[in-house]
Length: 50
Image (cartoon, rainbow, N blue to C red; front, side):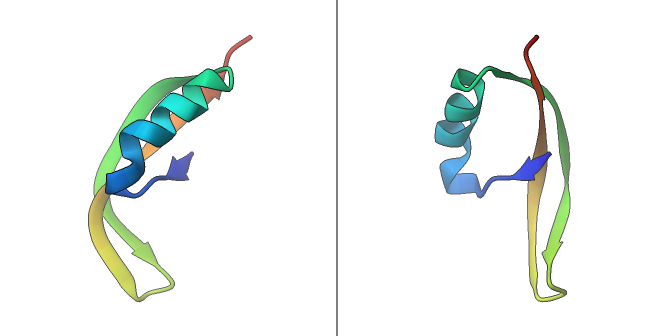
């Protein structure tokens, strides 16, 4: 799993998929980083293709 900022989402998703991974699931919610940065967003889950 990994977090991708909203403005880079489509570009990063394409790059990850071209590296032999496939998109599996999305987890929306509130993201918190170091108890400071709080934003609504989503975590994207990818799996390696076999």
